[in-house]
Every structure is written in structure tokens, then in C-alpha cells.
Length: 93
Image (cartoon, rainbow, N blue to C red; front, side, top):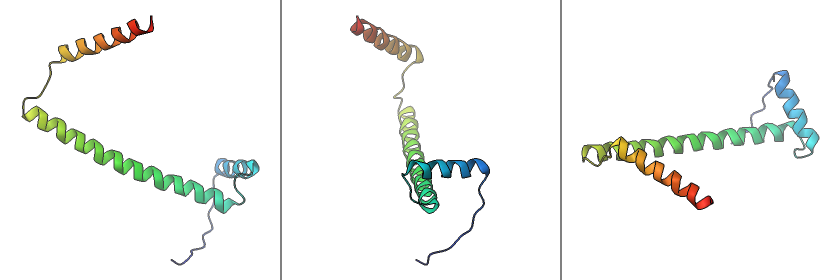
């Protein structure tokens, strides 16, 4: 892959962030700071995509359960939650 040189302008607050990172000694150059930031952005986007796919899958499962009549009354769910809270409180005593 061909290396692409790029000049960028940063807002003053971003310049301060880069300078602060350089002052910690963790990074040897501005390029390393920006590279690390871009790597984190890439990881975040990967995570967001994975989260979205998992969420869509969970919704599909829930809709299928509704179609099959596998639902609970809200009141029974609330009672179960209340009981779990009470059990947790009792375990702390």
C-alpha cells in the first residue's frame, strides 16, 4: 500500500491533547498519537457494527418468541425482579 502524506489542521483543543500525550512520553511523535487515535476509532467502529448485528439478532429472537406466544405478563416480570432485589438485600444482611 502506498504511503500517503497528509497535512492536517487541528483545533487548539486537539493540539493540546496531542501535546499532552507527547509530554507523557508514551508516544514519540505526533504521528504515533494520531495513529493510535485512528486505531481506536477503527476498533470502536468494529465494536459498533458487532453490537448492531447482535442487537438485530436479539430483536429477531424476541419477535419470534412473541409470534410463538412465548411472552410473560409485565406484572409477573416485575414480581420476579422485586423478588431478586429482596433476595439480594437478604443476602447482604
